[in-house]
Image 1 (spheres, rainbow, N blue to C red):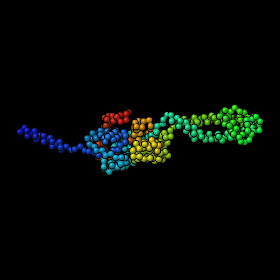
Image 2: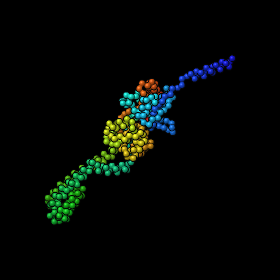
Image 3: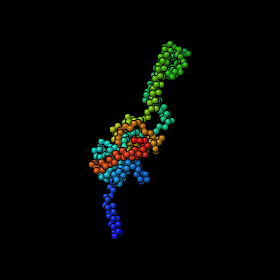
Length: 356
Ligand code: GLU
């Protein structure tokens, strides 16, 4: 009798266990974008993946990841119903908000610029050459080469008949060359010869004072042009982008930004390819999501590239849903809970170092 009771109890227990609904499974579209999503030997990890796993734990759901190559395809998968939601580094934009629904912001990002790093030695030499031959200094040098002809002709005209004067040769050639040499030497404050005739001396004194003023002006121009080159590379901020060849990732918000700025976007599927284009000098800079660029510059790109200028277009990442998705509200609640209980903070610290 006792055995029967136990048997019935066991069967009843098993039946109720089987009757419990299976945990719901959500299809989650994503795409590799370091350090938010990375594929580590077939396994997905990264800030966004771990954040999603925490959310899934809160919601008590299982997840199946669907990996897409671009953010555009990721969003299309969400829209077409191939996936229930999408998480990676998806920027919430006004245009996307019309076709998808988004969770609360899960990460504050924005766009930034990456350029090749300037090695110190080469940088100095390059700056010196480009400073001296800059658009400010070169016309000045050309103007002076022309102006020298004026005192040279005056001195040649008066001195050519003065025996024992400045000129050895009386004829125009090569007499004028001697006069030019004298004018150039005086300009460089190296004058050691004096004309004999009174008229030529007057011209010489005027030329000497003109030279002093010119040298002061020339020194000031070279100095300021050098300082400018020292302080500014070719591309230092968003204001330098118009007209430049800039590599970025196709389908991303950066492409549209670059078009608005009249820059020439070179689109690649992958940030690695965009960085490769920079290394091969096919592009002058890379514009893309700031956290991705900073991550690269601090790791694989260390010493070879540098991030310059401020974050110029602030964007927030969100989890994308098809319109009116029943999952949005519970996901938002879970996300807020993770921010409140410190789990979000821990994940942020793990992947980005400093506190959010
Ligand atoms: N955050 C950008 C966007 O949503 C880039 C994302 C990506 O390339 O994965 O357009």
